Image 1 (tube, rainbow, N blue to C red):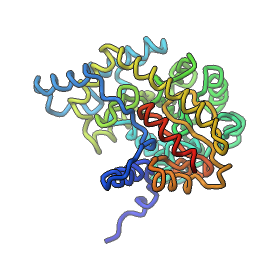
Image 2 (tube, rainbow, N blue to C red):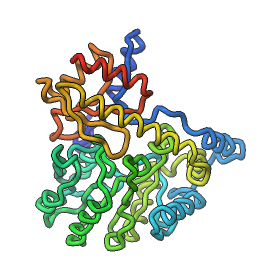
Image 3 (cartoon, one colour):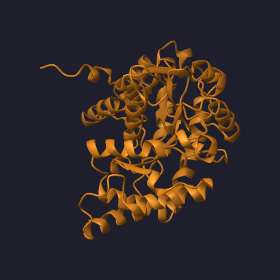
Length: 385
C-alpha cells in the first residue's frame, strides 16, 4: 500500500521518544531523573480539577461550537484587554485541542510549494515539520548563543524574500529559554512593518513564565501588525494542563473563518470538559500559578549557577520558560552523544540540541520541570561525563 508522499515530509518530536525510553529504563529498575520532557511537574491546580468535575456532573458531555464555548472566548478577550491593553473580539479567538493545531493550521493556510516560511533554529521541532508538510520551503532563522539566542533582526531581514508568506516567532523560546524584552520586540516589529504582505505567527505559550522581574511583550500590543498576526497561547505550561489538550489562539479577520473551517474538518471542537476547566483557570484564583512560577525561578537560578561551575559546560542565563540550553562542546562530545551517555550511563534524560534544528549540535536541552532535589542529583551525575 502506498501512502501520500506528503507524509514523508512530517518529522517528529524527539522529547517523546526520549520519554518513552526513559520510562522503559525506569520500568526495568534503573534510577532515572527525567529532565527531558517539556511539561510542568506540578499537578493541575485543584480549583481547575474541580471545575472539570463539575462540568461532568452538570452534563457538559457533548460537542461545543467548533471555535470554543462563547464564555471561554469572552474570558480570553477580557484577559488580553487586562494584560496587554488590547481589544480583541471574541469572534477572533479560536479554541483548539492544544497549541500544536495552531501551528498546523497556520502552515496549511499560508504554506504552499511556491512559498517560504521562516522559523527559529533552534526551535520547537513541529514548526519545521508542519512547514515541510504544507509544501512550503522551511527557511531557518539562526539563533546564536552570542545573541543569547534572541532574534537578530539583520539576519531576519536578509532571509525575507518575495516568497516569504509567514514568519514564526517564539518568545520565550523553547528550547533555549531565551527571552526578548519590550525593546527587542519593538525593534522586531519595526522590521516587520516593512513587509506588510508577510503574516506572523507569534508563539507565546510561555508568556507567564518569565524571570528577572521582566514582563511579557506580546505582539498583540502592536496595532500596526494586528491585521496579519496569529498568536498562539494556551493552558498547558502555565496551568500545568498538558494532558488536558487545550489551547487558544487569536486570528486576524481574513484568516479566522478559514482556520475555524479546518478545525471543523479535523477535530470538530476541543473537549467540552477541558474548556470549562480552562475557563476556571483564567477566571479563578491565580495563587497556585504564582507559587509555581516562583518555584521555576528558584530552579532556574540553581541550574544556571551550577551548570556554569562545571569545567566543561557553559550556559547562558534563561530569561523565561523552564529550560536551560547548555553548551557541552568542551566535553568533546556532540549533543547527541552527551545525551545518550547521560541517559544510559548516568540515568539522566535530556534532549540533544539537534532535535531542535541544524544549528544546535553542541547543545542539550535541560528541562527544570522537576524537583530541585532531583535537579541537584542530575547535575551531579552530569558533572561526571
